[in-house]
Each structure stands twice: as structure tokens, then as C-alpha cells.
Image (cartoon, rainbow, N blue to C red):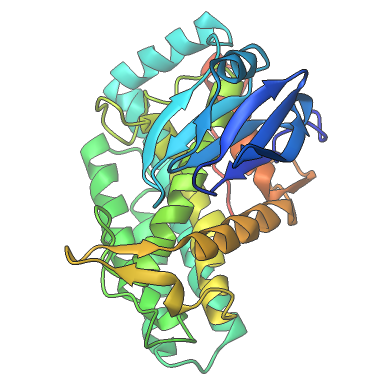
Length: 346
């Protein structure tokens, strides 16, 4: 694995009216007919555009040739489309993936291991919060939830049917989110958590979580494609047109580490403020452009933090986690690993 691979280099374009064009071997970022930035294409792994950002056809083709993903989102972070070059990777690997997804027992086993990783990592979020603030309001409920999640994990120690795995995952998620509000220690008048709301998010904390989950899904989908897997065909999440099922599967074990913990840090350290969110007449809440840039910067910074991966026993940036896990999954599907080792945060 190449540690200097351009996996962390994503260009986020959030300023409305920006135009991206090809100029030699660089991406030319223009606003109001003035060049504001030039980025060599070899420095980029992907380009993510929000809202009214347009690209020249030549740049789109250039990105396809150089294996740089172009992704488009609404101004508020809802995914629209992804543009990529020719599919890479071994067709035999993708056929193995499709066969495994069609075999219920095999799919259930992979789903089980991914859910184990998710529950362990969600529980670690709770335990770290208790370690950092042992006397915080609601500490008793958080301890109880952590103990309950340990009991829930025991249900996954033996192989089980896919519907049972999904049911256990749902039980663990309800337990986790039931105490998530106790982990919010600052700005309680602006940031609170009652329940998970997605389409649309109905409070500031849900907007923050949804935005980070969207960014993480993009990174995971890119990592899966990088090793030759199809992000659309998963094991835990059912196939649905337009849904990246495998990316959502792999994201489950990573979002407590790369999204939930970051969201709590941003709020508790007052790096984001309530004034950066707006409630519309429909009840939906949106993040403004300044706050979105702050969150993107924090997300990129978080990805540079280093950890020792428990399976490969190497120190890596957190941003490489999707790529390492995608590689381990590919090796398992090829038959090089007896089982898929989910990431377990300590």
C-alpha cells in the first residue's frame, strides 16, 4: 500500500457561481472570470462541488482519464451525481461480490461482521465520552447504554439470518441514539438530539450528522471503486436504484469514528455555532455556506489524524480507513482472507 497515494486530497468547491476548467495538467478554479486557484490534477483524488458550480466538458473528460472522481451535491449537501471514468478492477472480483450478495447465508455473515464493528465503535464513542466527562449530566444513562450494547454484541457471536442481523443493528442504533443527547455538553439551546431525522434533517445536530455522513459515503464509495468493487451492491443494505448499498455497509463501522465523534467535538468546542443553521418554513434545517466550509475543513483535518490499525498493525491517517477496509474486503472476497476484519476502534 502506498502511504503517499492521493487518497486524502479532495478539492471541495462551495462558492456559488464557480467555474472549473482544464488548463494544461491543472484544474483552473474561476469566479467572476478571474482565476482564484490552480491545482495540478496529479494532486487530486476527487473534486466535490456544492450548488451552482459548473465544469467544462474538457475537465470532465480529463478527470475521467486521470481517475479523479467528480461529485455533485446541492448547496445543502444532498447528493446529486458522481462522474467517473471507465470502471477499474478485476471483473472476477466483482463477480465474486455479486455471487456473495445473492447467497443469503454468505451475505448475512458479512453483514454480521460489519454490524459487530459498528456496535463496538458506537460503544467506544460512549465510553470515550464517559472517560472525558465522567460526571456529565446523564452519565448514568450513558453507562447503562454502553452495558446494554455489550449485551447486544453477544447476540452476534454466532452466525444468524440476515433479517436478525438487521434487527440487532436496529436495536443497537436505538440504544446508542437514545443517549446521544447526553454527549452534547455545550450550546444545548442550539444543539440537541431527540431522534435521528434524515430527509430532511429537523434540527441542527441532525444536519451536522447528515452532512458528515454524506461526505463519508462519498469517500467510502471512492475507496470501493479504487479496489475494483461495485459500491451499489451491498450485503447489509438491500439493493435499491441509486443507493450505494456496499458504501453504506462499509460506512456503518466507520461513521462513529469519522463522523459522530467529530460532530460532537465541533459542537462541544464551539467550532460551529447555532447561527450557522437556518430553519425553513417546511421545518427543514439547513447549514449556511460559512459553517459548511468550517465543517469540511474540520473533516479534512480529522482525516489526517493518525491511528494504529488493529488488523494490519500499521500507523495510518484516519482518512485512509475507507481504503484499508475496502482493500481487506476485496481480499476476503478473492479468497485471500478467511473472513472480513471490521475496523474496531479502541
